[in-house]
Image (tube, rainbow, N blue to C red; front, side):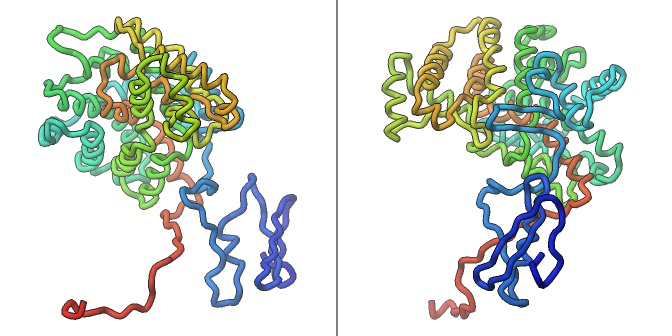
Length: 438
């Protein structure tokens, strides 16, 4: 509020601003380390002035919501879901329990957990028409594009989901999405290889069933390796949610129009489809392949310093320390390689590259530490997942985070349809020119 001419903001903390254009001063309340952007609209040259706006490309310093789902301290390398450290969740929990925690805000009781697992397990099948829908794609269609389209198509199979104020519909939509996303992902993978689709096996675990739908061939029943099940479960926990990233923001922006959850989550899939968001582990794999040998690492790092190469999988928009997810997943890489009977020269390169980079002040002084994408691609490669399906593997666990963000958004008393402002830079008052005179 304006000093002198209006009410002065009260409270223990406030921000005083002087507009040098007019000489007027303003006091804005600071709450939770933030000021409200709309307060700046009070700053005007005259009554006809629109008011001051803030300009923030990429929303790098703009809080769009209040959230109690995921806490990140990038400087200290901390990631917590509902206050529980990611390290504890990966050690003691399962992906489905974490999904429940994210969406409902607390760890489930034994009865709640058993019911939740049962519901998810028995909603894994998709309508047979989805198979026909999948068959309409070209043989070389990108699996992520197929997933994007099929998730959006689910809204036509469950029109009742549009009743987003109904608690049961919100719950069953969450169950359906978490249950069916692995099925859709596996169908897209099998389609790209020209293989018949494998139906869900409700006697297997969440990740065991997914591995079965991916890899089952002529055997009567697929028996997943427990090491692969656990590694994939941990990887799913690590990817479940990560605060207000591009895809989560997309879910909230589209969801703010009060569209059904399937359409909102499809927006999240679309955001993840982009190489700057979901494609980082593919870039890491290609970098390691290009390096080719541990003997070439020194020259490669020198190329990075000279600006001729890019160090992929290091650094993060949020983390300015070692990504806690990278520490955890690194422990499972060797187990996966052992379970798949694979030798990975790329892992040798990755380990040596990390060691040399972290011993070099050039990289550590720039806060360039490994992130989760640095090692996740090695696991997917060991599983024989094609690189164009890596992002599909990301979308499966992130679905629970998207649903948690969507449900929380609906309960936000300050929810408004997203409508960013712009700074217009084009011409004005231009006369139309008839086509004959152009």
